Image (cartoon, rainbow, N blue to C red; front, side, top):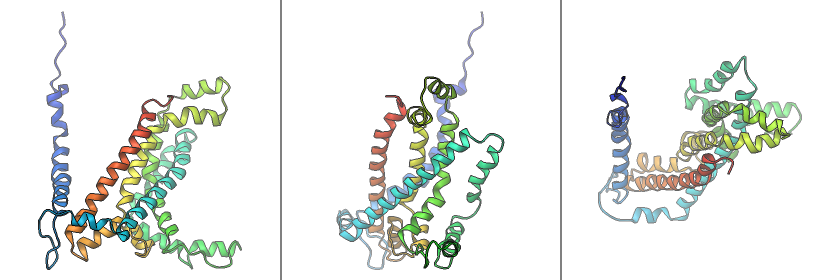
Length: 291
């Protein structure tokens, strides 16, 4: 009689070794730096910059000042708008790639990836050429007679939003594409056989089943947007301050490491709260999409 062989590689103790390299990496390059930031946030700025360790909540109290609370709100508003813009543009594109493209699907996916082949900085500077007062966009609009004078986009919130959506759109498309491409096509066929139209099938079948991809895309885009620094500096001219710019200035220019650390820790806590709300509201729908 044959006895089942024991697979040591599949045992729980052996499987833990698979996550050891990544665990060590995150410990040294995420947990430890974050711990330093947490400790520094209770200190004070040194006489010549840097940090003087201590235990005080002065830096967190300082963050409650209107100028800094406004920066928090601006960051959340712009990050939410950018994430929503990526979702509005990314979902139809991902749906088209997953359900309508067959022969040239690989080529279409490659076109979505191509922007990542160039530097983030170069792509952002490229947008300035497109949207400045004498750029291609304004030239086209004026030649068509749609506007009588250049539309001001550069150094405005709209210009920043355009840059955010352009740079982060692929991060929204790919999880949506994977989720839509794996849909059980028999459910869609059954819905149509039962008399449901395209809109009803999408609302009751496609959208609920694609929620895991929606959640993944929202997280992949929203989290980095809250710490964005390059796009607001280049396309906003530094006129609209994000938390990423505030934190950078405190560490590099002002050399107030204590306040910069407090801002960074507060942003992380805020992100955790937002993510928790996202996961509780949308995560339950993803687990039981037809509830």
